[in-house]
Image (tube, rainbow, N blue to C red; front, top):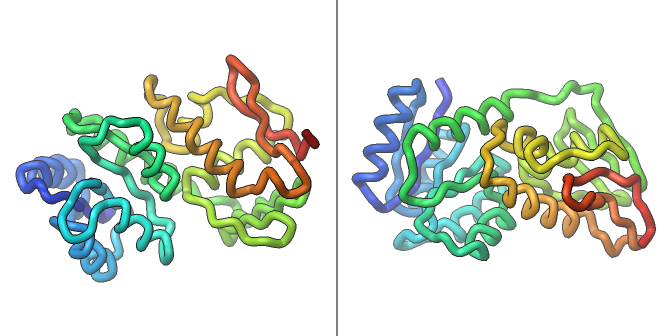
Length: 229
């Protein structure tokens, strides 16, 4: 039974989310703020976290910053914040997906299934990719650029893996959304643009002035094996 930790200070919402998750077969723990969430995280070691942003004592941003120092566990933001910059910040801090309140519980369940399904697709230990200074080892879930370790979120890792495995091939945003989150939800393609932006920054475009991921306007993205700009 997969374990999900829901962190939100709205009790009626956590009760609703828990009821739907339990009905779908998940073991659910509840925390009312980020500080309590960290305590429960260390105790139960969940498989996925559903996280609110605006909470007392420790908000969602501070929680995920702390979490990412020790775990790349999948996180879905559940937030009333609709401003795009707020969503960008959440993804940059390492969230894998987000839903804006109010939301349909069944869509949340679908997202949870998709993220966990993606996590279950373990890399073949023989998979190892090298290109233009990048080394990607699926057995250790590690990526280095010119021997420097790069810390990627699960979504960023999966996106880079599909791109580097087929250099030159163009993937649409929906293709990459399917890989990153296990879904092809129209309207969430912007999420991929944010993940790509974060990937480019982490890979270090300034390192030798390589552009590892090229935008194909009107289509999507492809891995370029390091084209000098």
